[in-house]
Amino acid sequence: QVQLVESGGGLVQAGGSLRLSCAASGSISSFNSMGWYRQAPGKQRELIAAIFTGGNTNYADSVKGRFTISRDIAKNTVYLQMNNLKPEDTAVYYCNAYAFFKGNYWGQGTQVTVSS
Image (cartoon, rainbow, N blue to C red; front, top):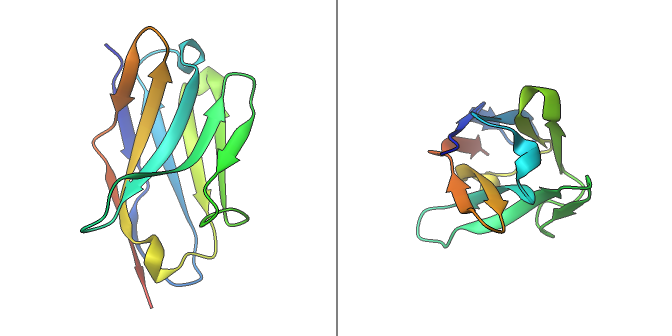
């Protein structure tokens, strides 16, 4: 059972930056994809960034050009660099790991609050 632990959330002013980290208890190379989701109050959880086995990445339109997902395989850690943050980015951010024969794993979430 792989555990995912997020960190790096907090309160930041609009235009500021944060970097989220997701540390996995096992090898992230065993997963087909790692991703970051977010859920704002009253809204559904949405995928905002993903990185795949070969290193390809994908982003939601709402964060494209502002957020960057990356990974350090040696540290079994995935990152989300968030720049030019906006109040609408306020949400709980969740790390996800997916493998075809294992399913989905989730972290506990970390709160990001962007003040205007």
